[in-house]
Length: 378
Image (cartoon, rainbow, N blue to C red; front, side, top):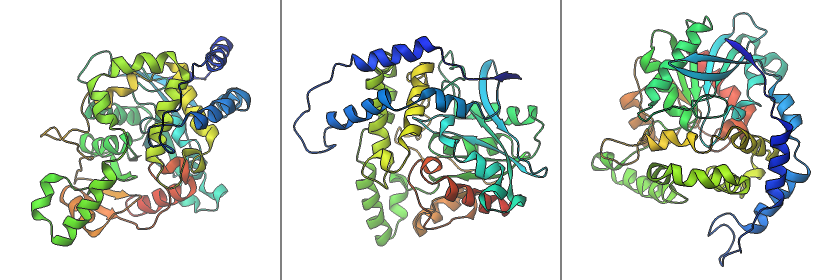
């Protein structure tokens, strides 16, 4: 394992600033607010902040405060953070980020997990935290061929934890990480003590409708309205990720607009993303995609169809029953009933705050729920 330090060349920062300054802005199309996508005036303000106030070097230094390494697993170079707790009996925990996110997603979560005493929590519930960058994201090598699967990522993560000397550990994730986390337990149940995801277990599909009660069908209809909004990035990135990658790779504003569109859709607790997530954190994530050139290679989960059911429709994370599971955002009685078909659910809280990327929105609440779950299984 080789120590790693982020050091973006100054020429790359200068190039980014130059490209931002030379942006060819489109006209604002008719329509109110976000009805036709990210408003021009809104994005101009965010870009002005990116140019004039955002300090990459300060955030680069903050990221470098976390011990980082690279290692080769299954033929791919993998970048990861490894932050050991001051508590010697801490439980090892591997966190998997989502899309369009990166290991940056967890920068505010790591401290409360590794050193709970410093954040007013029980030191007996500390974790040694490992945060790998999924292949194709950030500083991890992209898969060189098609056919890359979540199961392969899970096997890589299990091997990483073994190399670090962790024979017994937890696994956690949201979004893409919610697909990877249970798969780690499926491929290495002898070493995983529990699976915690932000959400996704128990969401119904069309196949569940015939067995629903009248009240459950009404709930399903409401879910359909919620899930039908926004840009279907699954379909878009399954169709032509290479085509879209040209724009995202060449224009930082094009990349930022795409990310802000998705963060707007994912951030359901506030009118705009930066009202729920610190704008500097959003821009650090966007900058990382830009500097590493991974906007295209990060499309592999959708292109390879990890979220596809056997019938070609959308699929939620698959469960497993050999290792106990819990969620941050428990749903209705219908969702719990469905979740328990394929999972051994031991943690199903109600009323936790935050939205889709809760580690960025509510890191203290997120850490508290992770501690609460693993206290039941460790």
